[in-house]
Length: 368
Length: 240
Image 1 (cartoon, rainbow over the protein chains, first blue to last red):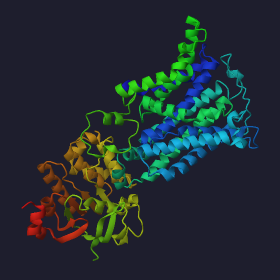
Image 2 (cartoon, rainbow over the protein chains, first blue to last red; image 1 turned 180 degrees about the vertical axis):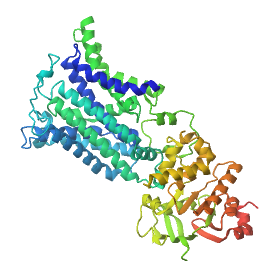
Image 3 (cartoon, each protein chain N blue to C red; image 1 turned 90 degrees about the horizontal axis):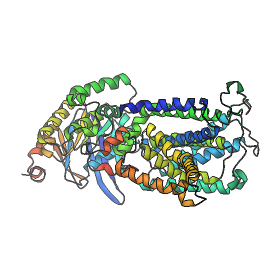
Image 4 (cartoon, one colour; image 1 turned 45 degrees about the vertical axis):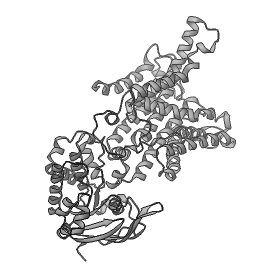
């Protein structure tokens, strides 16, 4: 298990040189960019579910808020015309703020009840986005999003001297520039979260997840700790949303921020290993990679090999959700702590742990 | 009166429609060990939870060093800062944190890093087994070791008053003796202790004074050795 520590930097290095490789395709690179964005989203969710143990089922709402903030601040339809940097910061802060404001009143709820309220919040946000036609353009989405990267810098950044691959574009929000930006941001998020885990705050979250009563006897403030987790988690989700809108150059159909996305993100976090950053990364790459990349490849492959002539049951994409479900059931049976279990969670699930008394019924969602 | 560290007057508290504590009054002086004994459901844990601010008092006064925690609505996390720490019933060790991390968590409200380090060292001297197992998960300790950790963890806040809820719960008699020895030593070092116990005999042996709690009311209070020899107490709590 010790060799696992080094695979994350190795993966990042590999992804960083990918665009320079001769076989790199712009198309594939753009798909990877989306994966990086979902990874940021899942890491944000992991702060909330994995670190503090609050089962949040509405993370997609913050993703949407981030995307629409960027939309509103950049599209020609509105008078703001900000750069991406400004818009992304605004998206992060707004999502964090909404997270705190919507969670503060429900902090007394636990477990399933909290999950239900967050689910409701996700749905309300989705319908609000869909129906606020005057601001969000309803189901059409806000577009085109073509802001410059930082204030004063135009959207055309001709880096043709750096061109090593004929598919490299000149606009910064296209492959490979946005690819590098998203990858770099993901890397920074990973480092930020690693430091956070080792900080006093990170430790306090674990204590809180374990035993709220004991934690308050130690002088921890449960309300403030939970809100700080939500703020960071929602903020990261908002940041991911900002990148998402930029990558698509539109906020797209609001359907992209619905409950399914929240659920898939929860699956990614649990599949990879609740609370374990590299695990979450793996979960996203496996699940979203399967969803966004592998199914299409397999579809094409089957089409070429067999020539199905359009019969749906031979398309992998039609079986996608069933495969998801199967994988999750098998995971829960054979690796309940995830592919890369977080050390501390694994320790709890294994029978080696001594008697903890009767207080194990606390908030520990997802692991059961 | 001036030596009173904690002075509780007419405290009322409860859950939902039920009042558990009825006009409960008690006092802990500086340097004292005070035992509170009583049967299941008498309100012992509720009293401590009230003192720690986890359960809100409905009426009455909790004066800690002269400051009324009830009237000032001091939240639980600030009460620890004032110098009132609790080792809760059932130990409630953070089982996924290591022993060392558990101790550090006890010092959560403190910002003096060197002081915390020195106090961890003190805890290790007091409980050598904790030093040996400092990098193990708290959940892997035995019951007695967990109790030691729970006490050590509460001490990390440098409390003036330490609240101990059932430190003997579920422990072998030999370990219980050990734990009570530690309580005596702590007291000698200047920590006042409010001890809640079902093991009345042990508790009254180490305590200076005692309170007997019955259905949320104090029914007897006296010097510990007087209580220990009181025939009614002996019949009701000491099984004689």
